[in-house]
Image (tube, rainbow, N blue to C red; front, side, top):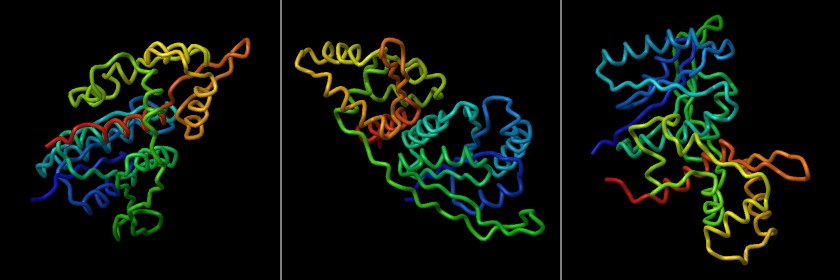
Length: 263
């Protein structure tokens, strides 16, 4: 039985270039990603024209096509957005998900690379044929080797759950009817003003008093090493502690792998 494949594509300014690359891959569904904001830096207007062209082209070819908008102007946020989108597609039954960065700007490509490394997702970029700096064809798509960035532990997972509002199950994070922005669990995160506040909260949840400040410090330092937390100095030697977008991506990867297998 053939696997259902979803190709996620960053939309750039050159529609012909993207068609060369997209057409080199087998896929059933195409998701086109553009900037949510009208940003001169990302060339939103040109990208939207390319997006319209590609959407019309592949719908005429009878492909399922979706358009999504990511927050390219918010540093690191696309890492969490792409991670969330990848897992939603897997829950929808797409066994194979690939990410095409042939049309992306470098800083966006880097963010997408990080998300693919965290989620072990195939990421590709076109090896184009050029004439006078213009793409006139393609040799193939190169698959980029991703570095394994590791995983979070069960204790780190429990700690990271402190930053989210209450939820009934991990499925709530991947509601396929909602985008990342529409899911309040992902957009309405908690922050802590001190390690003592984190310690008190975790003690209350666990119903035990034998947790030490040193143990919490250890968790925080280990998560900070993988850029999962934002630590901002405050007055009176306090620290504001919040979950970063990279931390959200690690969290989503961990809980997705703990969901019951969907058939």
